[in-house]
Image 1 (cartoon, rainbow, N blue to C red):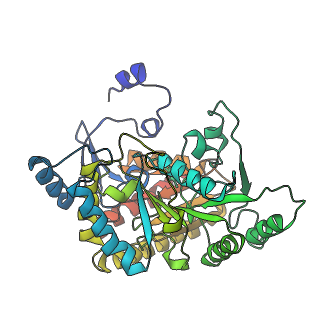
Image 2: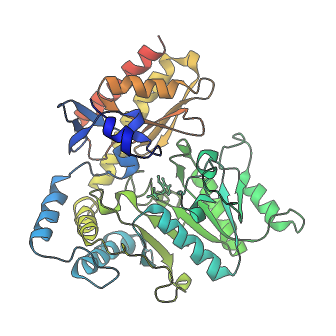
Image 3: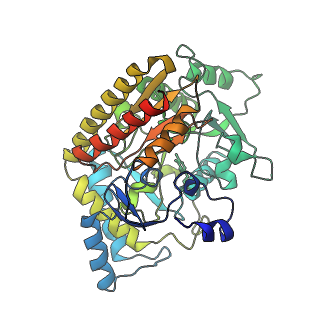
Amino acid sequence: MDLSIFDEFESNVRSYVRSFPVVFAKADGVVLTDEDGSEYLDFLSGAGTLNYGHNNPILQVALIEYLQSGGVTHGLDLATVAKRQFIETFSRLILQPRGLDYKLQFTGPTGANAVEAALKLARMSTGRSEVVAFTHAFHGVSVGALATTANRKFRDAAGVPLGNVTFVPYDGYVDASFDSIRYLERLLGDPSSGLDRPAAVIVETIQGEGGVNVARVEWLRALSELCIREGIVLIVDDIQVGCGRTGTFFSFEQSGIVPDIVILSKSLSGYGLPMSLVLMRRELDIWKPGSHSGTFRGNNLAFVGATVALETYWSDSAFSERVLSLGEVVKERLERIAARHSASGLVVRGRGMIWGIVSETHPDIAKRVSEEAFTRGLIIETSGAYGEVLKLLSPLTISDEELERGLAIIEQSFDVVLA
Ligand code: PLP
C-alpha cells in the first residue's frame, strides 16, 4: 500500500501509523477496513476513544438528523439546545444516581486541555503551586500536563524545564509490600522531607499508557483519605478508563471515593468527536469568567453524540454488566496464554475491559506479538515504559464472536512469536 505521501509531507511526529502502515478507508463497529478491502479488528479503539465502536449506528442517525435539522455545530461556550440536553442527561443519568454534585467545565477538546484546567483550578483554589503525580503517569503532552507525565520520551520534547511536580511511586511500583500512600503521608508530615505542600494529587485509577497498572481499591481509598486529611485536591484523570471502560461509568466507583475533580474526554462524545469535561466540587469553581477559554469548547455534535450515548448505554445496568462479563472472558483467555508460555514470565493485569499482558523479562515480546497480530488482521498496541505491555482496548460494544476472533489472533500470535 502506498504511504509515500504521508512519509513525504507529514511530520516525523506521527506514531500509530508506523505500527499499522496501511491506509484505512472505512470503519464499522470493531472493524477497520483499508483501501484494498482488507479488514482488521480494532483492539486499539482510538486509544480508548471508541468505547461504543466506530460509526456507532445509533449515534450516527442522531448526528445526521441533528446536522440536517440545522442545529448549531460550533458554539464557543454559548448556551445551546444540544448543550442543555447533554447537561440535563449527564446530571440525570450519571451524577444524580451516584450522589455526585459536580459543576461541569467544558474545556478545549483535548484531554490535555482538561488536565491543564484541572491543575490550574487546584493551584488557584489552594494558592499552592506543587503537584504530586505518580510514576508511569500519562496526563497529556501540553507543557502543564506534560509536567505530570512521567515518560522521558514525552518529557524530552518540552524544551523548557518541567517543574512543580513531584513523582511518587504508584501502587505496586516498588513491589507489592511497599505502601506508597504511607510514604506520601510521611513526606507530607515531615517538615524536612523536601516535599513542599502540594495543591493537588493527580492520579489514574488504571494507568493506560503507563502499562495497564491497576491501583487497588484500598490504595485509592487511602489516597483519597490522605488528600481529605491534608486539604489536597484529588484529581482523578478518567480520560482513558472512564466512560464505562472498567464496567462502571467512572473508574473510581468500585473504590467508593469521591474525587474533588474528575476529568473525562476520549469516549465521552461516543462517536470519537473531540470533547473534554472537567467535573469539580462546587466550592472549587472559583474561575473568573473566561479565564480558561478556548475556541472549541462548544462542539455541539459531540454534545449530541454524548447525550445519545448516555441514553443508550447508561439508562440501566445492562451495558455495565455486559462489560464486566466480557472482561472475565478476556482475563481467562489471557491467563491461559500466560500459563501456556510460563517460561516467558507473562503476567496479566487489568480490570473491566482494559487488559495488559506483559513480560518484564522479555520486553520485546509485546511489540513482536502486536506486529504478528497485525498480519493476521488485528490492530493492538503496546504500552508501558518500554512498550513491554500488550494492551487490549477493544470497543465495549464488541460481540462475543468478534471478541473470540480477536483473542484467537492474540493466542496464535503469542504461539508464533514464542515458538
Ligand atoms: N490522560 C490520560 C489518562 C490519557 O490516556 C490521555 C491520552 O491518551 C490524556 C490524558 C491526554 O489526552 P489527549 O491526547 O486528548 O490530550
